[in-house]
Length: 204
Image 1: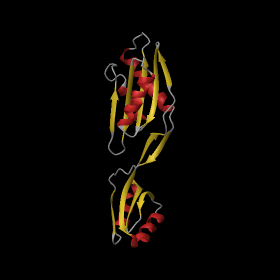
Image 2: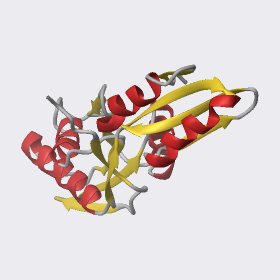
Image 3: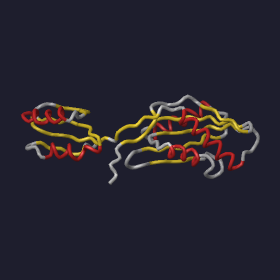
Image 4: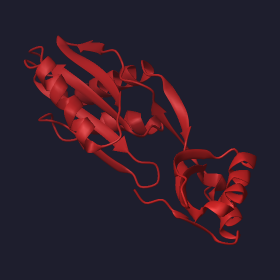
């Protein structure tokens, strides 16, 4: 049974790193990302910043339960750039991360082996420059109840030190809580067995 409920990501965008090989320069960057819009934004930003570069190769991985990833060679020979970059994301067990390596061609061809090595090294340097943290995978629930049952609900929230994300406390009350994945079943059960109190998965 897989009860793993943590994942590793990076705290903030890294300073640029540079790897040089036979006059070619490879600039490496790492960014924390939550969706494909922000990925596109960072890539466009680097294309403006390095407008005279030859290639902007990248790889990213998003998600904790359902993984989305992509590796892009951006005109380099197949699997010589994006895949080695993605390999570094995998070997560091990172997610919600984008690694971009920008290449300026130095006039000397490196060959596929040389390219794989250069992109891998630049990606590795970018990750080494990042502050990696471990986060928990949390599930959100919505609890609905009448105001008169407030004490019952609040007692559990307090006892279990649950994290309230949102609340609307009127005659009919709604509280959105965030629970660590490994505790989610037991917490759900605690509320579910209470009379006149409804708990369900929170859908955004």
